[in-house]
Image 1 (cartoon, rainbow, N blue to C red):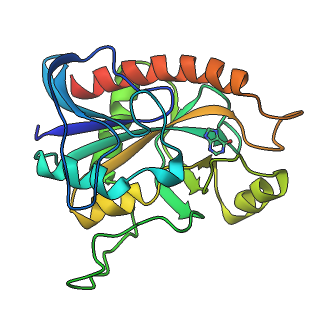
Image 2: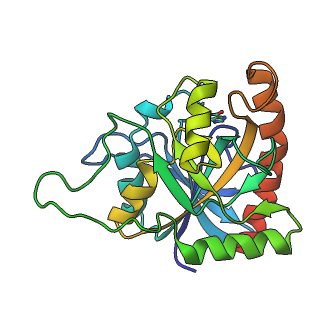
Length: 242
Ligand code: HPA
């Protein structure tokens, strides 16, 4: 397989299973990426890991330099990206600790530097299918192989953060067709498409979205569920590269 990158989100700042070979700090025309790029081996397959929120986790979703991150990965020869992200669950089976491989996105974020195409040439990329169907299919079969129950479809709604949503915002998102809510899916997916990279997401449900369970959302609850979801994500990633 060509070079694979894993972008880790909240709850996945380091990939413990990675045998680290080297760490690289890159400068890009778009500024500094979130962290150093860590090259290593996962089950003997070379993988480049990047911590989206920095290592340690310190960069808020709206402050992430998505362009530097994606440009840096491209520069290192990456062709495939698996983007792991913590999300809130909105519909049906999207319960805490569950994993979904989303197939669609609705973008509610704003004010983020979201394109590589703003100076020399205006290029309108197609984003009908924001995630690589090929990578998604491989993730879905890896989950079956590893015996991990996942949702093979889901609409990811990207909010601005860093605050969580109101209950009414989540109801609106549900009416719009969102199954999951996160803060980092965009512009990351679109930027990868602009640079013609195959990109797919693993959404790890940390909590029921606002108003979908009794009471308020606590960080303690998020951490507890993420812990379990990320353990399954590590297994899924290992099955994926096998
Ligand atoms: N909303 C947005 N992003 C999130 C959530 C949420 O409820 N949980 C984890 N990331």
